[in-house]
Amino acid sequence: MQPGDSIRIATEVEAAVWAFHEADTSKNAEAVIDLLWPEYTMFVDGNRVGYDDVSSGSRAFMADLATFHTEWTDLKVVPLGPNNAIASFIFSDSIVTKNGDLTQSRGPNTFVWQKRNGEWKIIYGDADHYPL
Image 1 (tube, rainbow, N blue to C red):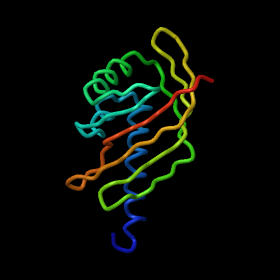
Image 2: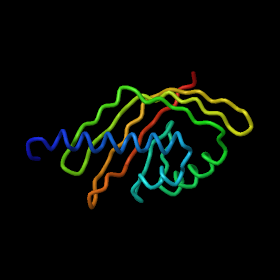
Image 3: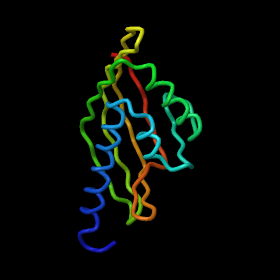
Image 4: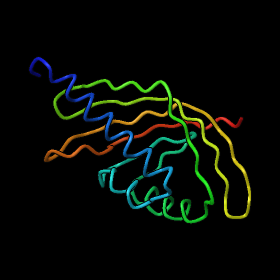
């Protein structure tokens, strides 16, 4: 990497992280899915899931929500090279379904971002939800 690349990469990936946050909180499943590469996999709460499961699950999950409030704190972006970076943060979710069911959780989240053809998307994710 060239001098200054780390700062540029961290800035670009941080913007992508906040775009993902906006997609989540606006309950826009298609925007969430659009930030994932087709090979995306995730390890969530002890279970491995792939792109197809995340895509269909996100659509169903978002359609069932009345509100989705999440705060992401302690964001750290670590550039790994010109086309890869890790972003990690702590989330605090407060989710209300259309039935009125409330779920609150907190936990760590890590995304591995990959840049292809000038576009940053997530290739891998890891999250653990701990009830509040």
